[in-house]
Image 1 (spheres, rainbow, N blue to C red):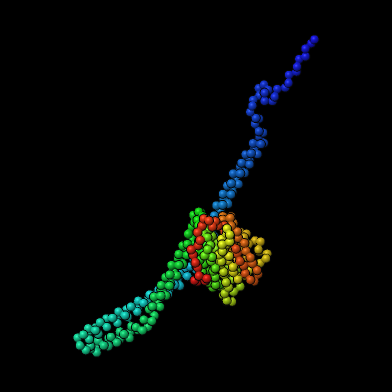
Image 2 (spheres, rainbow, N blue to C red; image 1 turned 135 degrees about the vertical axis):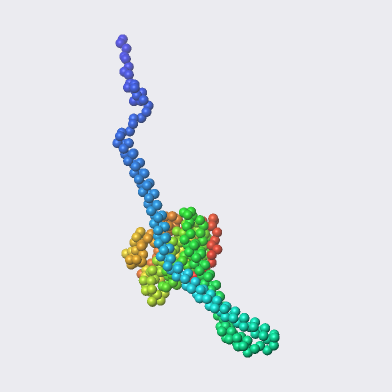
Length: 346
């Protein structure tokens, strides 16, 4: 019987003679696609880094621009108390000279009286010095001049402290911030922007916790909202010729949020502009009045950098309220220690 020879099964692909266990190299098209994707990834990363850098420079430029615009107003605010301090010091200096002359004449009269009856010349000089000194007027006005000078110097000190606080850089590091104090400082810095067209009222919650944030950038947001409110009111009262409006700033603690409300009695936002309020370079203000960056930067600072919220409520002819909400962990932050009066000093 003839035996059957079993046919040899084909060897596995990896076990064939001359084969290896390594995978086949990918096609050249695949390598090119991977390389292109990697190149796109690098370009996108560079574009993102450039965008962040540009955004940071834009924020700093806007902040410097705002400080530059405020500089003239701040100089005026400092110049006013400085001027009356100067006038009062000059008045007190002249009064002191007259009092010195009166003291000399009084001493001469006293010495003459000790030696007997004073001569007519001594009496005449004493009477002339007393009349020239206007002693009753000095006794009435000198205390007023001193108090006014003290008030003026405190005013200058407050403005300088507010400006220092407003412009102090955070260095890019978030730190606990007293929002009530930040608002009060910003109101002082922006005084010349609103005082001719509006009264500012505040209702600051003393139980508001400190908020971990970039203080200088939040200050900038508050400034933008106050200036926007002043401009909206100015459009209604025409530079104060029709009276003054009101800017009201409130803070509240709502659960895990610190809320700031800035309300103005201005013209309101037109309906067609409401969807574009936070768009960069969009503005309804006349040329030279606004750059369209303020609210866009406010959105970037609050929403993108602090994971907060910013929104608004508006009614034509009645005004606008901007609502800023920042997250806060009440278990980590202490309460505000700032207590502001209902109406900050102008």
